[in-house]
Image 1 (cartoon, helix red, strand yellow):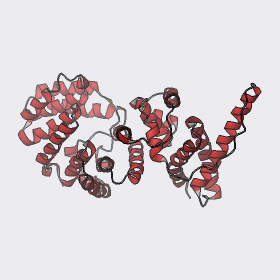
Image 2 (cartoon, one colour):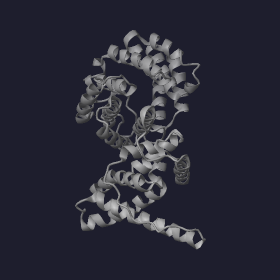
Image 3 (tube, rainbow, N blue to C red):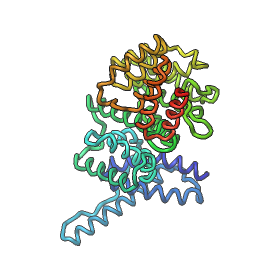
Image 4 (tube, rainbow, N blue to C red):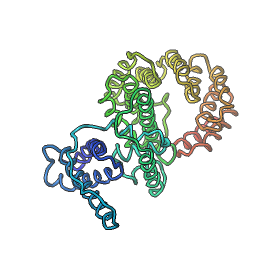
Length: 403
């Protein structure tokens, strides 16, 4: 087995083993340390000695031994400090895949969205603290402190490792899906830095969403989110030039789109729409499937795209949905209609000087013939983004309309 294959296997098995240990022993932080030690041992031994017949069982046994050793060490220290402690007895760790429960734990409501995302990538994604810090462009020490605080807050909250029930389960699943969506979006379009996207982060979000879908195959929103990710990720090779410059959707070479991902995503999007309730991820997947169905940008069914955004704006209203609907409306009724809809966002504090609002306005002003206004908005949008790839694109658009 190659090193890459071993790493992939360990990344898949680690959250399953961690979930099993947390279910048996609690002590989330200690369990994670034990699993990381077991993973390190496997990464060293398996390439040379071969993968054991039951790799998950091997990791589970090694991690449980490390954990019990740590418990014994802690208790011996307390005994030396004159505190009575019972000798721990190694217990059988259940052979079950608790990845979904682990996701529920990492997305505990006492945590901020940033902490939920970081802890999910660390405990379930198997990324190192350094990798997560690089992905979000913060110092490793900052990310380590964030993850440590998240674990402490979960411990203080006394969260039991069991499935949430009723309305709490639905709400926690909604948070899990939102965190996976945030991870994918950061990977697909990085919020800052020199690269437009981070394919490894997007791929990790897809992997984790596949795990959730595998455990909840009949949940239409889970299916819709996976479809949305696949259909969006399918465009990744066409989104930039060889030098890393952004290529907008209308100008992409669609022969470079990943047809296998599109076929899978389209089938999942259709299945998601057959569910009993309509949710935002199902609708976004349907929109992505409509774009994927068009051989050229000119063949896009914009009335259908706009209709789907209109439904989305009613069931999950937010300014980004309005922004995207304005683009679709401009394609159906002309740039003036799109600009009028954009104007409704001017007083929304969430969009104040947001580079996407400025860039869409610039695009529609350019289409309407107001080149001076387009230039000002392109320049303002370029100044407002922290993404160097997007900044280069917006500056090039500004230079084009000024000629």
